Amino acid sequence: MARASYAHSVIDDNVINAQNELIQEFENIYAGANTDILDITYRDDDIHLNKYGLEEHAKLWLSYLK
Image (cartoon, rainbow, N blue to C red; front, side):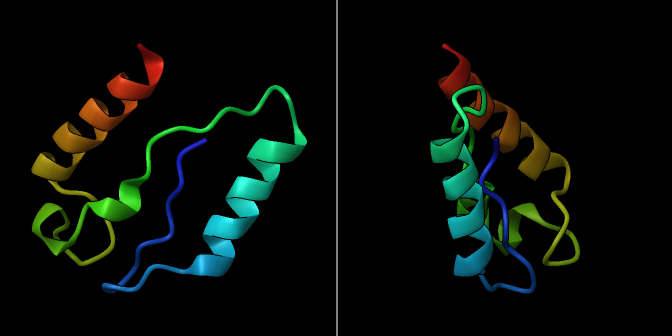
């Protein structure tokens, strides 16, 4: 599961905490990429990832899958 809560330059700790709780509670849910580290540089509308954000997102996931 990716940790993703970034919207309008704000990271929502409640969302992250809920995602982390699911990862800890269920043995078949694994921690994945933290997309919140991708700031507005990687987002067209300060929410959704742009081309560069998607490329970085893929690299983050690759590091978890190795």
